[in-house]
Length: 107
Image (tube, rainbow, N blue to C red; front, side, top):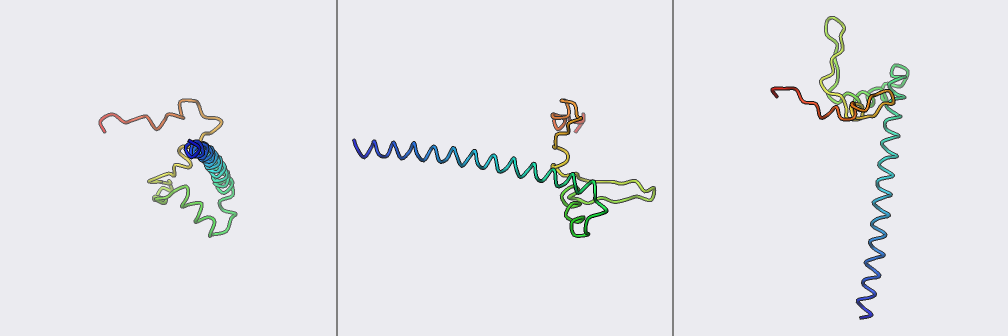
């Protein structure tokens, strides 16, 4: 009975440690995403002022498939990063949070 009681105490201790690790991981994930979004926002405002290396990094993070100009100098982006498309904006309406649920008819 003492061995079973000790194992139960050990299980409770391990469960507490697991819960703490999960909460730390979630906090770290949220902190990293906040940092990444702020970094991309700052880089986008000063895109032409930063070094070439950081411009390339920023471009890859925001436009993973690249972007190009046509002969009319219009910009086309085949793909935009989820960092930007899923980032909540203070000016957005609540409906924009579920915009990824919209589907074009016939597809």
